[in-house]
Length: 129
Image (cartoon, rainbow, N blue to C red; front, side, top):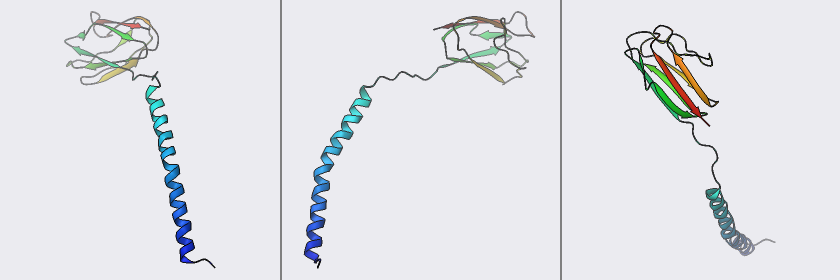
């Protein structure tokens, strides 16, 4: 026959066993956290660069970035513009005022570009590894 005294003893034994195991589990968890803090992170967030179009000029007209980074062209002008790479590696649709175009550069190199509507409107993106 199970008495309340037996139930009390079993419960007390279970509580003591859990308490005895808990510090080891906490130490193991702390060790995992410590190891993850030491692990180097290899992935970094890609940076975004902005080029503004105003008065039929790109600003900045020349930009150096790292491969994997994004460039956003923002039309702050009161005219339409386009972004077209000389080597045709990227090309925007028509950009009305307040529109923007973005391109992520995956390869290194020098990329010259211009606007279809304004022949003197030119820029260069240099992409480093």
